[in-house]
Image (cartoon, rainbow, N blue to C red):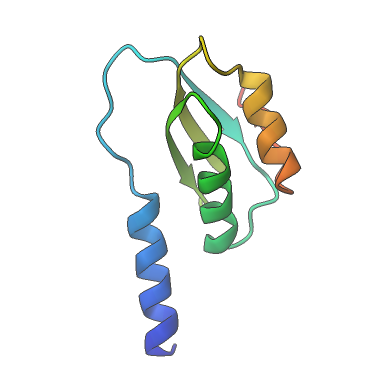
Length: 95
């Protein structure tokens, strides 16, 4: 693997790592089945974080999930799934 590719993978992993969050904030776990690579996961994370009211999105390529912490007065779960779908990665609430 080239040095650039290794660096890119490490950078993406660091950008996707979870940050500390306040307890008690509403969160939802979404399944995002169409993610197939780290770039897909990064795109889902950035898409969700660009939605007004989203405080944090943590995306796992391994489990094909996204955990989103959000302000329920600013955004709904259906808006989160719509944003992910619009970016090419349909999402559904994990059951």
